[in-house]
Image 1 (cartoon, rainbow, N blue to C red):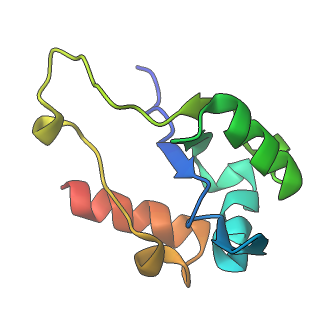
Image 2: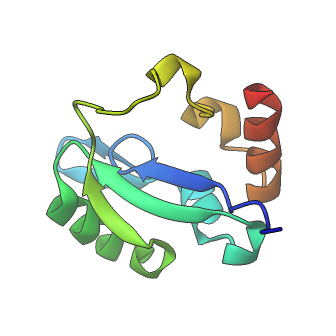
Length: 115
């Protein structure tokens, strides 16, 4: 019997890890701390952005979190799957819901919402 796969967490860049005010970029420190949490927290992390994979990688480098992610992706616009999105085993957490939580607490909250 194989172990339960680790949860997959997709993390956005703009207004999640960094906010822009004019030309100034302000780190969202609570979210960056969550991303920097050790992999032992139990999640595989991917970074994505509407700006595309290259932008996501460059921004992660700028924020010193590039090594936290498995890969960089553009944010999807179309999902093709044999299971309707509403039936996916997905939990959506907004920045305001998880910015004061530990990585383990975020994963626990996500699993509670999926049940």
